[in-house]
Image (cartoon, rainbow, N blue to C red):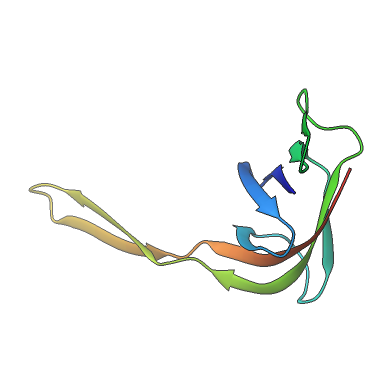
Length: 103
């Protein structure tokens, strides 16, 4: 059984027991989070598609840790002017373990 959920402006295919990195979700380690925006649920023998969301379907997970993604280097430069700017960025992420798919 798996589901497709929408969180942080992105869509993720999740199954029970899997660990995923999502855009930052407020909470502490061990907190339970429920996702209501479920786009699709697939059982062993049936598929339920939402229009756009599946009614009554929820996905629950627990926060494993608050982490950061890989470092991205942004370099800006204007030629012949001596303007150079180098910036690093690490996107905050939340690592979650999916515990239940209901509906």
